[in-house]
Image 1 (spheres, rainbow, N blue to C red):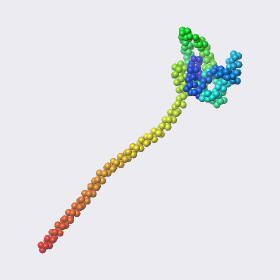
Image 2 (image 1 turned 90 degrees about the vertical axis):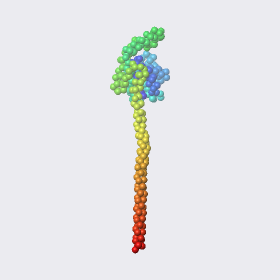
Image 3 (image 1 turned 30 degrees about the horizontal axis):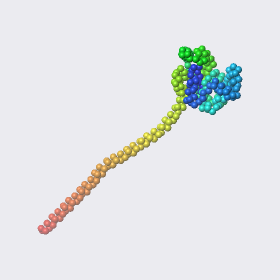
Image 4 (image 1 turned 180 degrees about the vertical axis):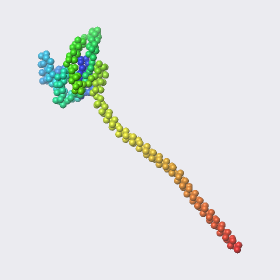
Length: 281
């Protein structure tokens, strides 16, 4: 994941950059830190930057981009990075685009922390008043006039980057005046929704066939039970009918036997009568 954080001084870019590093296992690239590291390491680009800074001159864009090129090529930057403090101008953004294209890389998002400059200045004024009342030593950046100068420089040099990345369709805006945790959550919602939802959809689809199989399996025993019940019911219905037919056959045989017996007795009586008449004659 490769990101750029935009926002004026005091917008909270440093705080959010640290949280992005922890949440997404990426590295924070600060131009100041990279310049100092390159100078300390004595690299070719670092030595060039050192000579320029010692002469009291601003480090040119091509030197800064060269230092960034060396840094993103290191092993710990393979998962991605968040740029804080660079690019500061549109020409620097264009140089960064060329670098990433040469490396076959691209930015995932440019996130701008929108803030109210008047409130930022008021916060600094309140902080200075509170620290002075406690007798605490003020930092160099705890100065409303210094902050106003930095905000003016931001509006002139860096604010146009918002339009530059908006035209590319990469700019996402977050309310930087919200509480820190809420800002972090808003940034997370921008970066992670698609990655978080896809696995859930896949699991849901995979669960459907299993549910159907279970439903079918649950229905089968019922159908067998129903068929068995029908067989038993028909057997019970057939039993009385068989019993009746058996009784009918028995009663029929008895009736036939009785009729035969009656006929036999009648014949015997006729025979005896004939014998008597014969003797009488």
